[in-house]
Image (cartoon, rainbow, N blue to C red):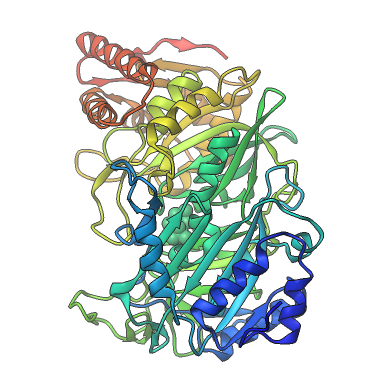
Length: 618
Ligand code: SPV
Ligand code: MN
């Protein structure tokens, strides 16, 4: 192999030992284009990981905190979330239904931006698989990045696989090229030249002039988009879902996969006290012997900090205070080397340093907007090895059997706190595909705007939505035991705008769903699905939370808001009428739901009390 500048003997040897075809060519191509000063090929050994940890500190991309193992990273002021506007699929024929650009044009543009982009930086070459090592659909990945922070975070979140690349001849692998580009004050300088381009045909993602994890960590949402397309071709699903074990009566553990848009309670659900976590963000689901199984593509958590406190999230709180390898991002650095995030225990300090520089109350950013102590999308990264409630099967290549699938959004006025769909098709249509949520700070742009977010996967869909839905409907066919589908809503409010549930209540909804999966409790037949009976919830509130649960509270939470449901149906239908390829079955299910709601309205008026609903026995 031709020796290239920046590539030392050791790295060259490490690359030459790889049997998987195409790896060396890929690395050399971007080495010569991006022109880093040096290269580090990570074999995943403890020694190599330690090198990356040290470099992250030495380069200033991270700084050490007072707690041993904890470090802190800042992204730029304008680089605090996934950037929808700058993220595009490159398609030979751009689609009006996917954010896309003509492939050749996009490739030319991004290669021009990458030219010389790593000057003065080191390029890290990292090898991973998505999913547990040895998992039947494990996805081999190669990441090139000039950020030690990205390399470090990926070491916490993904399974190293240099040895597998060396031993095996993978016929294909996902490719990621990331460059922070020119830096100023440690952050990407050319924000207006930020680009995240996903080349589906070449299964390669390019990302430049950005550092924020969701834009730069190739194996997270960037890989997810590639995996959705590959799974679509091969018959499995890649979903924006946690996987957790809910602990039922006796020793019973029932696994649930749950899709929530960002910042809607996904991580705090799977980190509930008494339950166990397999993964908090991305799941692969497949069918095996009439059942659905799932694995976590990751091995760590890149979670939201905002609002986490010891009372609401005791498990997370303990994890966050544990001396272990953990990377905080975009929180407030306090004078004693600690961190503060909005909503944590205790009062905010009166000064510190954050993503906008020196911070003090009343601080305004370069755009004149008030700057809170920590960014709402501030996050932490930690490996599941350091999470006390990791499920014993979290790294099992056989995955776990999925008993239930949960869809949850930020919905102030329509969905009940918890409800079960009548069956797979009804659940896919009226829960998953009808998931609406108010936008949050996880993506750049306005917050609080209601949008339809099918399966919480809107931002990541790399195939036309109509085809995705058709596949989802198919997926449930012929299963001897399809997962039950549920919706949850942690954000329902009353007419005065007050939340009708507390953060703790989700523990009860989960236990109820667990009982439903096994047919241990009955339910009430509403026009929109199956609702819990008061008596079952009363018992669970007592048992799980030690709390009295009044009937009037139940009635406020679970009365069916018919006009709201009808307008939602209208919005959903109008949206999907414009989408090509949506199966007619989809509209039939919506229509049937509309008829049930209208009949109920004629009989009972706008607010349908659960007292009028027929019981479906267990
Ligand atoms: C999300 O926003 O859904 C996340 C974090 O999980 S990100 O890496 O930005 O996608
Ligand atoms: Mn996510």
